[in-house]
Image 1 (spheres, rainbow, N blue to C red):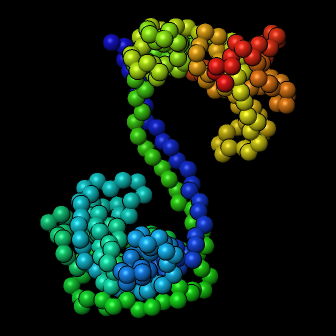
Image 2: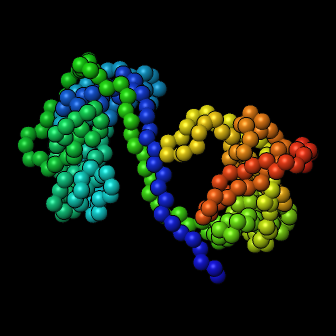
Image 3: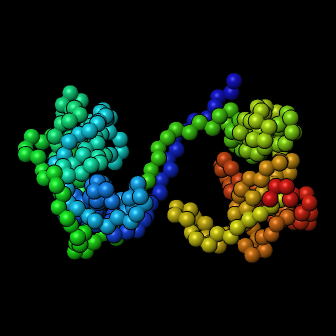
Length: 315
């Protein structure tokens, strides 16, 4: 069996969101070393607070302050911290029910080892030295043997100077991607400037890129078929917003292209002509950059446009 490709892959983007009055008060409170919860219609205090009652769906606005001490309700030991986790040394993930709250807050517990952690242990917040209005203002929890905090939460108006109104949370996923047998063959063919798909033995459709199985019939595909290199634009969009780290000037056109012999359109950038002259039915061919493992873009071939009936099932 041929070697199957495998490579590390990172998906990373900033997630930006605005905050309503409840989340704004909660995060601003953390900046001021104050933990706020919210009281529901039946008197339950939820921490972290939510904007709507999970039982009645009524809007909630009754903020209360709870203690910075609490009890571990459950935990799991993390022997090998990963990038950007709260602590750089082994720690426990814990759910902590703060004094005065009915629900638990997830965070890290700084402990010397798993033998030092147990359900029911008392802990307190260790505040970050620099606080900006984020959950990371709680640096972690730490073991605590002092007096319990007040169990009756105090009312709070949620008013702070310079409240936090929005956050940017970086999202990142690191994993190893293995494309499988069919896509490995597809990628290796691209290295030789060839495009291959696989034909379904039942419906006889050729899928590019191949997935190893027909999405319609649900049976394995093994017959390799070379398609293209020319194709037809089936539909397209004009991109007017420049992407970060992408050295392409806007506006440009991104299109679905049905390669000759394929029964599924793949996508690619159209260049070599004014963006406002790209159209459905345009005949195009790939342009390869030196040393590239895939086409850089597609350009017009100069052929007459394809008749709509020849590609309408691929739009």
